Image (cartoon, rainbow, N blue to C red; front, side):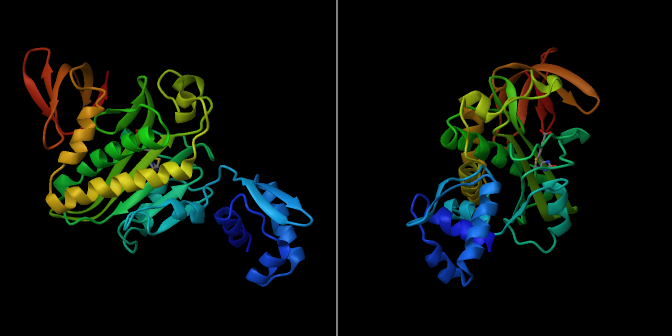
Amino acid sequence: MKEKILKELYVRQGEYISGEELSEKFQVSRTAIWKHMNKLKKEGYTIETTHKKGYRLIETSDKIIIDALKLQLRTKEIGQEILLFDSVDSTNNYSKKIAKDAIHGTVVIGEEQTGGRGRLGRNWSSPKGEGIWMSIILKPSIPPTEGMKMTQIAAASVCKAIREAAGVEGYIKWPNDIVVGGKKVCGILTEMAGELNKIDYLIVGIGINVNNQSFPEEFKDIATSLTIEKGKKIDRKTLIACILKEFETLYQHYIDRRTLDETLEIIRLYSAVLGKTVRIIKGEQELKGRVLEINDEGLLKVQLEDGKEELLVSGEVSI
Ligand code: BTN
């Protein structure tokens, strides 16, 4: 009931709705409506109440509200099913559990992750309400060797979306980080299940530091948030809707035409590594070289110190 009332207030945000209208609409007493309003106020929503006019939502708390998010969503498949948790160990882990029966495009979001995972077995700090911690479950009919292209589609989508919806000039640190001023603002963890020649499902996990005001000492020099960069709070719902729209557009283009051209255009335009000398950790090896190009398959072509050229499929790049 509380969620239904909140949705009504949200849809008619700024407008007064009388207790009588709400009690008729939801078939509960006016006292029940009043109690739910008090609960919502305690949760952080600013609801103006006047005896004559009724209730009016002034400001939403920064909580992600599914109904409010769905109102902003402009996609056909991605995000048609959204699962939102107040707390979850990891949205990638949860997605794995449900992937078999989930529909393509299902999105799992956590307000916090208690066991957020990064690449190379690292932890991913995911404090409550501060970021976007979400996973997209995909079921494409493509060979497993193409699976990692989803990471690039996600990186391009996030980079474009944070520029459009948050006004932050992010750059893509191939293959799966978004950086602002050299500090990481987003990381992507793509995981795949299937057989040698068939993908059962892919999970694209996206972690974005959105409204973090500060970082623990050990991350201060390497991590930042959109709020820190922009100097104001960013609405996470709007940003999620924008990412999912960009993702669907690039994903569908790739599936229909089997070319990454549109994604690569963005990746090259906003590349943090093209033309730069970088250090690359490839398995046990550490290499140093200059990035020559990101080829049409999305691979990184580097010229190593000894002059040799190498094509990288994945790796940890630092500038
Ligand atoms: C990295 O840069 O190391 C990748 C970080 C990926 C973090 C996201 S947050 C949502 C999803 N769930 C996880 O446990 N990890 C990914």
